[in-house]
Image: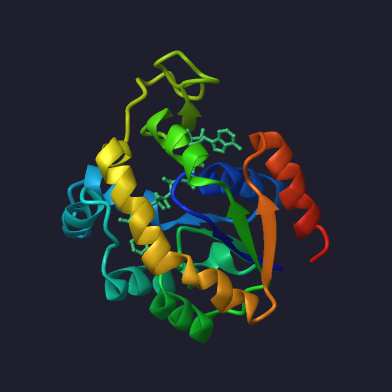
Length: 207
Ligand code: AP5
C-alpha cells in the first residue's frame, strides 16, 4: 500500500507528477486545489468560500481543508493507498493527518523559484483537468478533450508572488516536520517531467 504526500512550492510540478503516479500505481490522486476549483466552477458554498482566499493567493482555512480531506480519505478507493497533492500545507494540517493516516513517504519536489515563476506564468489548463505549458504545447486547445485552454486566475504574476511567500511562511516548514519523522525523499524537480517521474518512481519502487 502506498500513502504518498507530494510536497513542493506552487508550480513545482506536484499535479503533473501526481497524475502520472496515480496512473502507474493505480491509486487515487487527491488534489485539494482541484477539489476547490471544481467547487468554484459549480458555485457551491465551499467554492465561493475557497475562491475568496485562492484569488488572493492565500490558503483556505485549516478547518475547512482538514474536514474535506478527512472525509475524502474515508472513501473506498483510498483503501489501497493514495497520493496527496497540495495537502497538508500547514503544520496543523499535517498534525490532523497524522491522526487519521500512516503516510509511507513524503516526496519533496525541489525547484528554484525562478523556474517556478516561468512555469506558472506559462501554464495553461483545461476544465477536464489536463495541464500544459505554452513552451511545450503552444496551441490553445486540449489534446485530451478538444476544449479551449485557459489561464488559472491565481497564475497572474502578482498572485504568484503572494503564493510563493505563503509557501515559504506556511508550507516549507513541513519539510523539516516530515524530515524529523524520517519520511522525506528529495527529488530534483527541475528536470523534464519524464526525468522527474523516473526519479520519483525510483523512490516509490523502494517502498
Ligand atoms: P493548488 O492547485 O494545490 O496549487 P499549488 O500548490 O499552488 O500548485 P500548482 O497547482 O500551482 O502547481 P503544481 O506544483 O501542481 O505544478 P503543475 O504540475 O501544475 O492550490 C491552489 C490554491 O488552493 C492554493 O493557493 C490555496 O489557496 C488553495 N489550497 C489548496 N490546497 C490547500 C490546502 N491544503 N490548504 C489551504 N489552501 C489550499 O506544473 C506547473 C506548470 O509547470 C505546468 O504548466 C506544467 O506543465 C509545468 N511543468 C510541470 N513540471 C514540469 C517540468 N518538470 N518541466 C517543465 N515544466 C513543467
